[in-house]
Length: 324
Image (cartoon, rainbow, N blue to C red):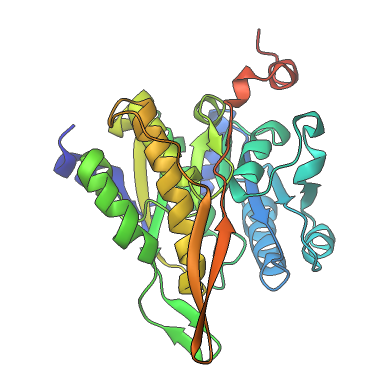
């Protein structure tokens, strides 16, 4: 498909799906089950509002969601208690498939959600959104309900940043613009049609999620897009404009760690697909400088981008979902 045609045909706005009654009727006609996964690590400030909003609007008022689950990485604040009090299922990531060990990272939570949750479609929504609204779920689910050829729906939006002094009107998506978009432009130009390839909000059919590997860390979104593109083509991907997403600001050093993880995951994926030649062994150490008065201290971060296998390869998963 021509990229301009893809952008025209597969880019939507959440307002196209305002009729939730009609959306629920169509979902029920197809006998679809939809699960919402909220991956968390110390999100006590925002998680309660998200659960209240989604439960009241998309379970009680319009039964679009069949399940709301928090998959937690081991929060040390009150994230799990708040989530349970507001009615979400709460699971510690380390308690799911414990025989496979515990690994730290958002991708680990997303992977374990594929086993733990029961939906035919899983919607992932980050738990740090300050302007939460039901559109963060129904806007992503709707293309999967109305268009059977679509398997993976990504959110995009304007990304103002929240500071203690208020909201800065632009500046989000820095890693996208200085790393991911240049890499896609060089090696996977069709994926440049995605406005926010690293957004943490997306809805995916189970048959896709169970068939792709999951990097456990920062590289999970980038790898997923490449894998879905390679296996199902651009026709299977869609994106929806959710208007605006306000979230907390991240320090530049933290974005550096994110970029390091994404780059490692990207290079390994490009090597596996034969897009680039054989790589030398890549370091897992990122070195940064930290200023102390007039001195600079070098700080080393170890960032490992391990990968979990496709869930369908696990006998426990095949048994749970009756796959022979």
